[in-house]
Amino acid sequence: MKTAIIGAGLAGLSCALTLEKNGHTADIFEQRKEAGFGYNIAELMTPILHAPINDAVKFFSETHDIHIKPTYNVQKIYAHSENESAYVEGNIGFINLRGDHKYAFEKQLAEQLVHSKIHYDQHVSYEEISKAYTHVVLATGDPQDTQQIQPYEIALKSTFAGAIVKGDFIRNEVHTWFNNHFAPKGMGYLLPHSKTEASLVIVYPQYEAEWVEKRGEFWEEMLSQASRTLNQEIVVEEEFTIMDYMVGRCKYPRIGNTFFAGNCFGAITPFLGFGQTGSILSGIYAAQDICGLGDYEKLCKPLYKDYDDSLVLRRAVESLDNHQLDLVTKSLHNAAVKKIVTQPNMSVLKGLSHLLKPFISK
Image (tube, rainbow, N blue to C red; front, side, top):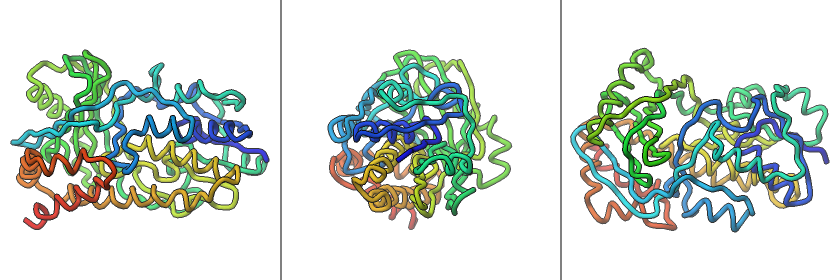
């Protein structure tokens, strides 16, 4: 058996690690000069997206012997709408870094490899690799690579505008904004890297051409709103913009001896747009199938379910105007509602969808 992994991201590296733990190795081809994104950004890992995994760090360590070290644990998430603010607290997840940062998850995983080799700066084609290897794991992070081989259902394309910012932050507190004036049918969020540095981002679907054209205006309003909310000057250090970011899923997790993992599979959950847990799981599951320890299609069924539930919730949020978003935010002051988004071992996505139904009907 000779396995190739195209892409040294979370899915590809977790696949290689799982193969090694079962006595196999893989050749990993990465078109960049190092593992990770081409830009630095913080992301959120939360059980809201993948119940009943309450603690992904513990789960990957104890169940799969894959060890990741997040930047901080999250104890409080604030939700801000146009006229309301509320928060929920508890063990809500983790903040982690991606990209070129030395503590990025991709770099942590790459350091755990023992025998598998990463071939950096190698832009290889699927056609060539599939002829030279018995098994191929497509984990490039680009759904367009999947589209060259099979149908890929696109739920939405998004625009990101954001920056690494300086300020005075509480490290385990996250802020989110739901406001159609500057993030139409989307959201803004602030994830601290440290006491003085954070990622500030708005992300929204590209449903209207005008929204894409106004991204600079939206970003300036997000920056002003964050400064007002946190009652301090937020200083921009390094800006970035991402266009046409695809969120969707492939039709077939496996075709022949080709496995689709990470974003090539559909690991991004549409509601919040984060996909680290799903990407790592898809890589692990692909390796287990290759090693004869499971069936990839069956193993991926919970990931498809998480995706579907998340998409339902996203469509519900997209349907709300700013007044309805205020009502939802205000409801978070209710103790029973707070419990929905922090209680372990339950489908929070379903609970939130149920919570939104009365507001949608209004």
